[in-house]
Length: 115
Image 1 (cartoon, rainbow, N blue to C red):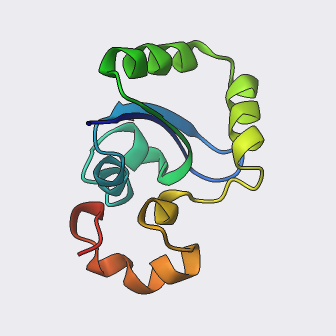
Image 2 (image 1 turned 180 degrees about the vertical axis):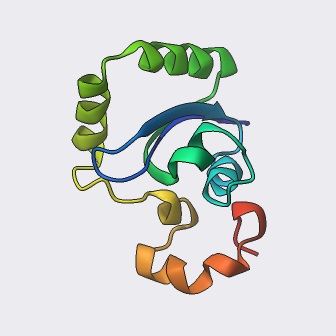
């Protein structure tokens, strides 16, 4: 079954935030990280995946994204810190790797996926 993800990216701890929705979280975050997506995230260096939530229904995912975009910044920060106190980059965990392991192999991941 296809899953949809709502995600929060940050430029750093308490930095610039970006909220998005996608059907392929690993690929989408990779696109942000490699600046394949021109615009806000590329301009402000918003590449760290700090929170994400999965949905089976695309309409629920889109509704959640829209609700989060209306939240005050403090609420978004609280959401992140409830799940990721240190604002660690969660992208490596999408592949079952630690950040250190991921650094060694990142260039081997075309389009954000392990080969």
